[in-house]
Amino acid sequence: FGNSAQFWMNLQTRYDLLVAERELGKRIKAEVDNAA
Image 1 (cartoon, one colour):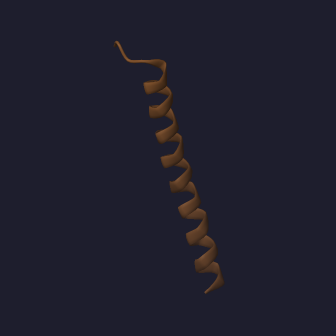
Image 2: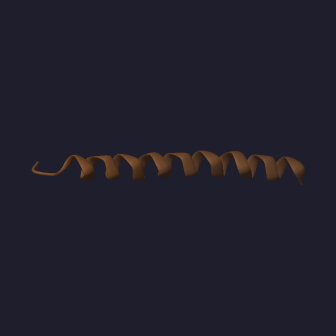
Image 3: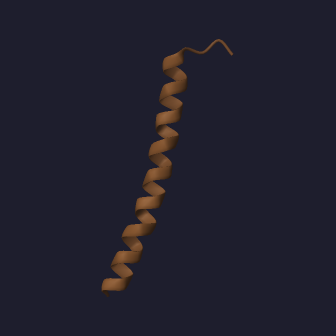
């Protein structure tokens, strides 16, 4: 594709962060709901 290795690493990192944020959001919401 003509893209650098850095491009692909940045793309993967952004995806990994998005997935982690979604999971943490679910966990935090569950903890808050249980505490209420």
